[in-house]
Length: 430
Ligand code: HEM
Image 1 (cartoon, protein in one colour):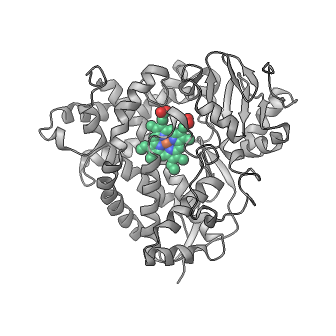
Image 2 (cartoon, protein in one colour; image 1 turned 120 degrees about the vertical axis):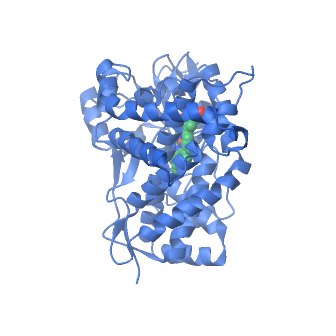
Image 3 (cartoon, helix red, strand yellow; image 1 turned 180 degrees about the vertical axis):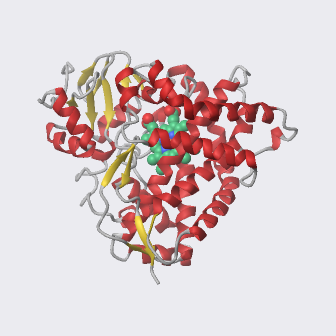
């Protein structure tokens, strides 16, 4: 017989809410003694934290009708739109996901790599050689340019591209402001006040996107183009239906939002961790000079383990489901905790140590290394993001050896990501 609910953190909801807002990582860490699955209660819905790989496997392989990730991501609906692959569930989700997946196929990645390299090299030249800088400023510029060029296929030198770029930046800046999720969390993402708050940044961007979609539909070379927008316009679902303009708009914004801040933050952590770990930046420099791609990959894997960008992935229970011997009821949340799984001593010896060598000849486990989530909701851009990170790391390493500036950086919350407190402060060694 399944047990009704896992051990619960016994503290008033308000106290839990304040502790979560102060530092969600510390909050989860302090409650982890309750067990491999435990319950915290700081929102309208209870969160059942899942931290054991076997239980995470049960979550990621559960039927998409039982656990809804889209409902769990609903707070993002104001900007992403109702057709976003992140917001939808079940058949509708699968339709959008299947339409998007070919754009991220391996062969495409090869063509996209040259674009990433060009953008990375240009930005590396802009990094100061005679003083300190925050890596995140540069990784954000790279990630935004990469995602815009690859997703929208606009020319980096054109006016249209510059307008789209500044509109995207305005929207992302607004979403990244402290407490930007507070109002949608309290009122819901479809409340008119929340929509009004987003309108000044979302409306102008939407207008440009719809214009671009209309123009691109008429492009004579539409079928041959490599950008994701063109691919979405020619894509057909299993019944032969194309995507509507609204669907295309929602997926473009989703890719820009999902692919920008995440990759930029992960890159800032790569260099922050390397610089603060004795001998590591020199090792990267040497590996790149020797063409040792394995070392570069292990650094990415280890960074995403120890500093995973997102602490959790969220599923809302849609019909009663049993996980790890507990039964969960509709409306509750089931939450695989990336942060806690990645720090399990029984999986990763000395879990707090940044040690890329732990990945040498070792493939990351499907349910023990989950920076990109899992199951039918696993990040569509995972291979793309890893490739982008590696290309940027090589471009930086070719420019010189980076040194740390100041102490190890704290993890601070920015929008939904966990960022280095000073943005990855570094300087090139002279
Ligand atoms: C280091 C960079 C990135 C990290 C850490 C990351 C992480 C994640 C995570 C944790 C999820 C949720 C998975 C789940 O619920 O199980 C996700 C979903 C998603 N990501 Fe990423 N992501 C990154 C980069 C990207 C990029 C570059 C793109 C696209 C260009 C992208 C597009 C998406 C999309 C479309 C989804 C929704 C998938 C679905 O619901 O079916 N991500 N990502």
